[in-house]
Structure formats: C-alpha cells, structure tokens
Amino acid sequence: MKTKVFYCCLVLFFLGFQGYVGARLLVESKPDRDDTAAYARWLVSQNSWGILTTLSIELEGSPFGNVVSFSDGVPGKGTGVPYFYLTTLDPTARNALKDHRSSLAISEYPLGTCSNADPESPVCAKITLTGRLVLLEANSKEAEFARTALFTKHPEMKGWPKGHDFQVFKLEIEDIFMINWFGGPKPLTVDQYLKYKM
Image 1 (cartoon, rainbow, N blue to C red):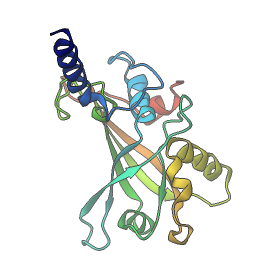
Image 2 (cartoon, helix red, strand yellow; image 1 turned 180 degrees about the horizontal axis):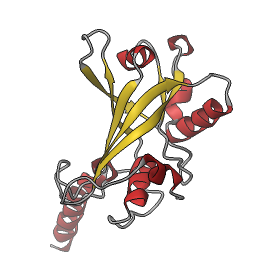
Image 3 (cartoon, rainbow, N blue to C red; image 1 turned 30 degrees about the horizontal axis):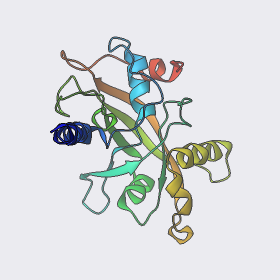
Image 4 (cartoon, rainbow, N blue to C red; image 1 turned 60 degrees about the horizontal axis):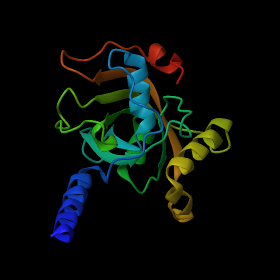
C-alpha cells in the first residue's frame, strides 16, 4: 500500500511539474509591476525569443511576423537593445534590408512566471519594441559584443552553416508598448527604458 501511495504521489508531482518544463531559469527576479522601466528591461533580458515583424517585400508591404531568437547582452548584463543573427535566406532579413521598419513582440509567458494566466491576460506581461532593424558592420565592436551576447544565450548559433551568411542585426528602438497589469499600456519612453540600470 505504501508503495502505491508513493508512486501516485510521484506521478502527481511530475504531472504538476510538467507545465514548467518549458520555462527558462531566470537570471534576475521579477521586478515590481509599477516600476515600468525595470519590468520592461527584465522582460527583454530574461527572454530568448519573440516575434519580429517586418514589412514584406514579397507580399506588397504586408506585415510579416517571424519567430526569432535574440539577445540584449550576456545574462545579467542586458542592455535593452535586442540583437539578432539573421540570414537573407529568410524573408525577415531581406525585408529589413529593403525597409528598416519593424517591431519585436515578447511575452512573459515562456518564462513560466504567469502562473495560470492566459498569455493574452494583462497579468501576463507583453512588450512590443518598435523601430528600425539595421544590419551592423561585421567587424565593428558592437557586432562583436552582439555575437558574444547571442552565442552566450544561443550556443547553437555558433554552428549554423557559414554558407548561409548569417549576419548581426539590431533593433534601434523608437517606441515601446508594454502591458503588465490591467488598465492599459504603461507609459515608458525609450530614454527611460535604455537608461535603466539592471
């Protein structure tokens, strides 16, 4: 009987744990939701992917959203500026080279810190960074910093095919839209966001 109880408890434990398997290990704890700049920077630095939307050159300027990996710095030292490792074999890079206007949407949901809230719920934060997606000069210090940030967070990228001509892009942020509770978007300027010290 004790063995059956033990196995039942073990199964229930793993079933309960199953929902958290996809969540990432957080480097920093979740800030107070009223500290808008801190929350926005935390949300970007803790995430590793989002939906990057560009204006499609193949679809007559229609928005084209694509799942992309990104990094804003090595863990614990985020800058708030998202960097990407993209190839022109993918429409996102081709679109950005023609028209820089783009946006990056990121959700708190993949972090596993939304409890049982739906990803669309205001309780589960979301942020959209809008601006210009620009290609960095390959040998610049910023590109070197970006590659270190990207390869630290996404080690697999180092082994991606050289023949695919992956290049480093960054999002020059011009506007920020964030919801992390009920009551609509939180006011936050780009300056406030970038100057916040993690």
